[in-house]
Image: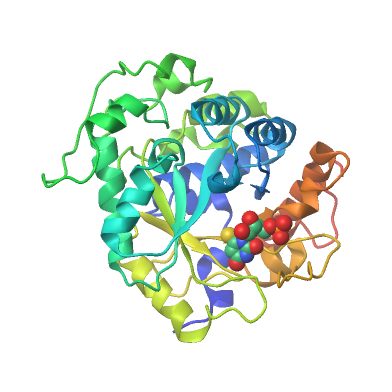
Length: 372
Ligand code: S5P
């Protein structure tokens, strides 16, 4: 099998990858958003109250494409958290990724995903899971997402209301339904804040693979020089579907996600390309011709090497250029900065520069198009 450094996705711009066959719809959307915002930055929102979470999202929102949450450390997690996050995500154009790290039998993870005080499936388009329980964790989560979304009138919002979820709650024994709609009666839809929402796919089905990728004539760079807001308007709102990242490698010292375990993870992902968008890993795992998985890498810092608690850090160049990852996940590197917006911009610029150099859109050491 070829090494990932020879895989075509290594040198392909994100925009091209968004148009490859069988690209997960949410991945395709994310690649396009990355190009528009010139960002491959995911901020890890490891904060402990709703106010802190929403403040952080406001501060860094313009620089990121993903906000990673740990909902179970938010002491006052409630409806206000979900709505606040949804409104800021829609206004600042990023996608929420709940770092739940599911790791149990299928029946249990379905309940953890859909139920409890967090009802993750309602508000987090992306979640992640370990594969040590075996491949049923993937099918169970996929089924739970499809079931939760099947009761949802699908066109424009990425959030499912509590009532809708309640009406379609687990456990269930009915075959998975697939709903479609030609117009939204969702009470939140008018308020998504996503320009272009009204023009997004009008026949989005509720399955996880549901809404079609944005059509090629909406590719951002076709209108070179247009403003970010108008490019995002053309892109439309994110697809309704849910997607999964698999933990294939970890950043912490002495972790056991290595070698054959990592390869098994990639194999499992290949069997579920419509739901598994990619990996949490330290390097790209794209090896087979059809692979177009997105790689998100935590353990990224512009200064630190470790935190004394097992965390190990690398810089954006090593992660994006050398290891072929696509997205840097940064927590404390930004969270503890005096000016978090400014620090997020620094990471965004560094991550994007590394990407542009990797795919040959800029000479090594060249200046950013925005002059920085
Ligand atoms: O291997 C991993 C996987 C994850 S998701 N290593 C990690 O550090 N993470 C998460 O990334 C971790 O749970 C934390 O939320 C974030 C890293 O935070 P930082 O402050 O060390 O950048």
